[in-house]
Image 1 (spheres, rainbow, N blue to C red):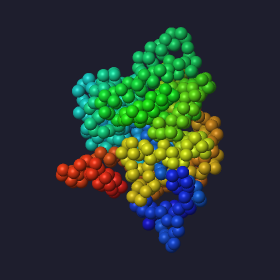
Image 2 (tube, rainbow, N blue to C red):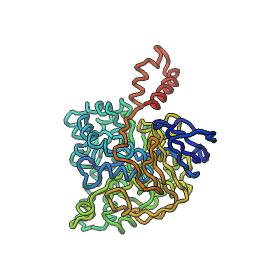
Image 3 (cartoon, rainbow, N blue to C red):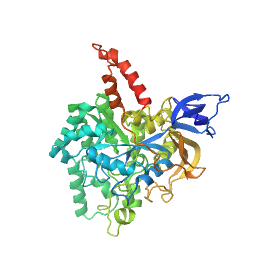
Image 4 (spheres, rainbow, N blue to C red):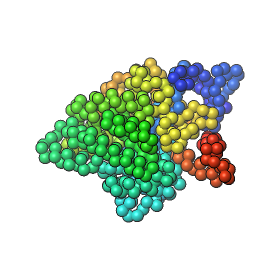
Length: 497
């Protein structure tokens, strides 16, 4: 046996249960209350700290290759490891080239596969340009490469990833819907954001909150309404990324009750910060899209996270270079780049302000930090589970450890964070990926190696295809009768690959 984690407290529902976790060849192979002479190459005494399934950040922009003056895959994954994240899912847009077909996928993967400290997956992409140029056939080659979802932007991102018009988005939904793949949408109404940004510029507004006022809550509300309407019309699985408004929470809640295939994520900054305070104090360093909102939005997002309306949390980690992009000599709230780091502080915030303050139950904490994202993106139970056969990914949390966010003390290249100075109680102290410790706060910090992290493919669709291919569905069997056998075979296939 490779590893034993002894004296671990693991979640069983909302209870913490003391156990010893057995690991071999990077997989969980057992749990036992008494070791009874069992031995392993390594034994780690967890000292009755909490051990949860390795946390997942499903929304990162690590800027590599192409924009490595902002972040590299090495520094981004080190930062994630220091924050208790064992797997991250990188967006398709902030790299050169952006991922929009199989060729661009490989051009992104090739230089990154030897850099990662933790495991990683990729979003695929579709743009308005792809629709106009008749390139929607590039959807399936990306699926074959294992991308976990597709991303579209209703507002511009970077020049290599054009936004979609309403009709182009509908066309993309129609083509992806039959695949069952999730479609993540940056939900802001382009015309509203553009018109009111120009209006406030002409009025001479240069204060930080003007950014949030121009990109008003109504811009997100109308965008989400359209996304939900298109999902109902096409049957597509849609996902609202980085949702920021209380109106969005209400729309998603109502749509779920109607049976619409819609999910949503929020970010730590939409749980903790408001535009008036943070953008007045930090200006461009608190600029992000969608912008920070109001205190009431914070409250409603915590409630939505607790009751299941919001499915999980991602960071939208998108750092920029301070000297040239966030705080250049000619920077204003209008021309500075919108983005902040966050991958190192997501889990500590959810532990301190969610779990420890009673906003999230223990079971819900596990869901929003790992399990739900793993299921949504087709990598469960390989990831996001404390089960025999799952990857031995663990986030070890000291619920009592006090921690103050310091923007200068980070593994990320971005030495700014609008959450700077926030005092927290509860922190990840060890990050373990497939049985190997990559971060140990009390014994050297980052102790892993670049290149250990592996690319993780979306497996559910590929596995289901194999199940069907090998005739798990018996000829003539009703779907309801065959479904349990398919799910059992699918689960077995996920664990063994």
